[in-house]
Length: 133
Ligand code: TYD
Image: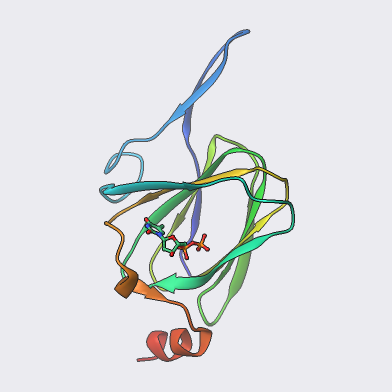
């Protein structure tokens, strides 16, 4: 499994807060075709329960705390995104769940491709078959 936690470049200004940024192809290893974000979620809600066949993603949490649980069919790992300057790169073929640790946390995703339901695997047994194909 190759999910990778990265430090997003961050510029801090005394008394004015911080600004974090990333650039496609420079700071993350793929072009970005889509940004989406999940918001308005209550504490302890879990979303996800899918893998992607091709899609690469950078997940980051600009507000709150979300636990990302990952499973590549062999190993499981989890990461808590609770700092706006942290990012998590998820490669294809990783089953993931996202657990909201703090109400109204915002989970943002920069994705390598447009939305395509055909790229999703939403059945865990199908996921295991896919990775062992
Ligand atoms: P989904 O990826 O299943 O969300 P989560 O993994 O957080 O539970 O997407 C939820 C719904 O939103 C699903 O009906 C597909 C739709 N959707 C789009 O139409 N475009 C998008 O870019 C995304 C990410 C989802």
